[in-house]
Amino acid sequence: MSNNWCTFSIQRLKDYNDRISAAENLKEQIESLEYKFTNIRAATTDSTPVQGGNDNKREQMLISNISMREELKNNLNIIQHEINITEKGLQALSKTERTILTRFYINKTKGFVDRLCDELYISKPELYRQKDKALKKFTMVCYGIVEL
Image (cartoon, rainbow, N blue to C red; front, side, top):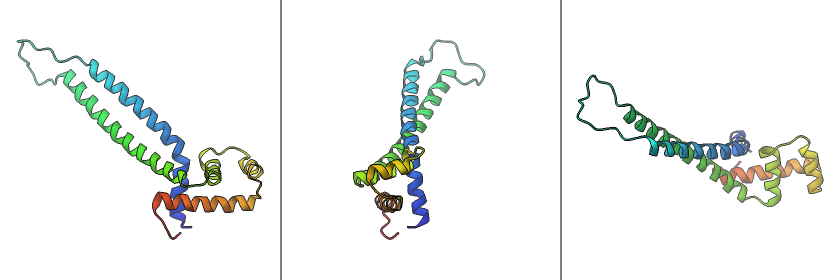
C-alpha cells in the first residue's frame, strides 16, 4: 500500500474522535455567539452629534460577533465534512474490519492486540493481515485509490 495514502488514512482514523469533539465545541461556541448577538443592544439614537472619529463600540461588537460566527461556521462545515468522509469509509467495512481499525487507531488501549486476537479467535499475524486489508479498503473508499 502506498505509504502516503496509508499515512493519511491512519491519521484520519486517529483524528476521528478529536474531530467529533471539535464539532461539538464549535456548535456550542456558535450558539453562545448567537445568544450574545441577540443581546447586544442597538445603538441609541439621539440628536447629539458624533464628534471625533471614535467607532461605535456596539457596532464593532456586532461586526466582530458576525465575523467570528461566520469563521466558526466555516470551520464546522470543514470538520463535519471530514467526519462524514471517515464515517463513510468505516461504513463500507464489515463489522470485523471496522472493529479492527477502531481498536488499532480510534480507541486504542493497552493490550488491545491480545484482546482482539482472543475476541476474533485469530493469531497476531492474521490480525495484522486483516488490519492491512481493512485499511486498504478504508483508504479506497475515502480517497478513491484503486491501485495501492
